[in-house]
Length: 215
Image 1: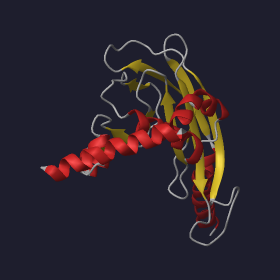
Image 2: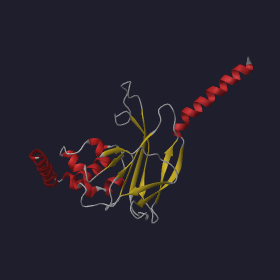
Image 3: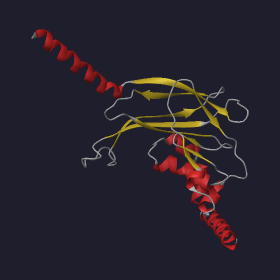
Image 4: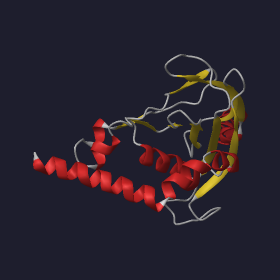
C-alpha cells in the first residue's frame, strides 16, 4: 500500500512540475543579418512579448481585459555584430506561453515571427489583382538559441504605405508593449497616419483597380 501511494505521489509531483514549467525561462541568443550579404545588422530594434491566454473560454478577464496574462516583455538593439538576447519560456501542454516578436531597422523590410510578405505584390493584392495566399505566408518561427533573422533590404518597388502601416500596427495594436520599439518606429507611424499619404495610396489602388477593369 505504501509503495502504491509513493508511486502515485511521484507521478503527481512530476505532473505539477511540468505544469509549473511555464514560469521557467532561459536566455537565448540570436543574430540579425542582411539577407543579401549575410553581414551583421547593427542597431536593429527588437521586441518580444511573452504571454498566456487565461480564461478566454470562461468569460474571465485578466490584466487589460483581453484575457492575456503578460509574462515578460524584452527589447533592445542588436550590437555591432548583430547579436541580441531574448527570454525563452518553457513549453507546456496546458496553457503554453505564446510570444510575438518583431525586428526593425530603417532601410530594411520589417520582420515579424508570424508572416512572410511579398511587399512588391501587396498593392496588387489590395487592388484585387493577386490572391491573399500568393502574397502572405505563415512563418511559424521558433525561438531558439543561435537563431538567425535575415532582414531584406528595402526596395523602391515595395509598398511603402502598407509597410509603414504594418510596422505601426505591430508596435501599437498587437500588444507588444515595448516603448523602445514604439520610439524606434515613430517615423513609420507618422507616415502611415498622414492623411495625404493615405489618400495618395488609396488613389494609387483605385487606379490599379480601374486598369484591371479596362482589361
